[in-house]
Length: 360
Image (tube, rainbow, N blue to C red; front, side, top):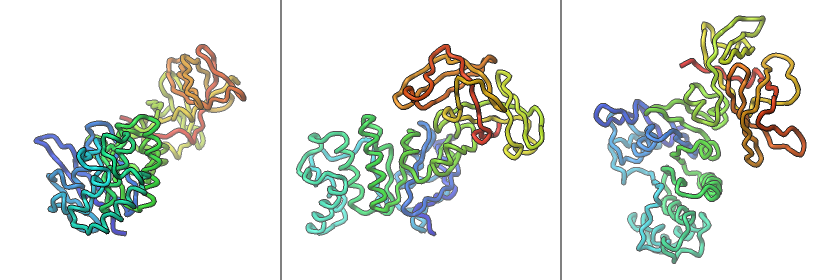
């Protein structure tokens, strides 16, 4: 299958600094791919290179199997949605949505039909006569989306389009945007620094770090099976334990971590020849109870802090050896344990929940 978007060895330098450094990436037709990473990592520059608003230092950009590297932005079959909405204040909602069709010379009757369809698609039917200053933030974002999709681009590029919205509206728009993408079948390349947003919306996530792609995979893979320490630490909460090989026992290896913690895991999970590694343990994978733990990978700890967050409780634990762990437990106060600061609890780790990462 020909990729909808393909980057081949793409590099963008500003003097001696590489904002994007040799990135190769393929986006499938109809895919919702998110470029995720911290501020300054190069994800917006990557989006601008696809759009044609930045000039490549090296490499090439392909869309639908065609090399568009030399094409200016207005000739590429892409459209873009910005964080700032970029609506024309002097035009009505209909005028804003129709702007791109005017530029394409679409006939008035066809234009009216497509604008009406686009407004209905984003649940703004009946608001076409309003001006941008008469709209809420969520409505303005919908107008920007309608303007982008009405021209039927092959690829839609979205640069943190939801970041200006409040938390509740942002979550609603995430679901709305995913629904819209599935309904239209347009390839979306979405930029965000918000890990929860990326996990909620994406078919795949490309994690960007220092101008390079750190990992590409489904939300499930990037969260549960990160391949580097950065990937583990950036996506979701993470307990990262620097450990060293302490010995072997049958089909298992024994490792020793901070605070004298000793853990057992399958030898198949420990790379051959490795002496030191980093273990990832997600907070929700640490099982806590008031009952004394029995078996491997169990140990006591003290609750230093308990933070109630509705459906979940966030616990900060410390072991007798001084190791601090973040734990998330379902808040089932009517059915199970309630943990408070000062309580002693017993922790259990399942070997399958321990992810071995290269030591750094």
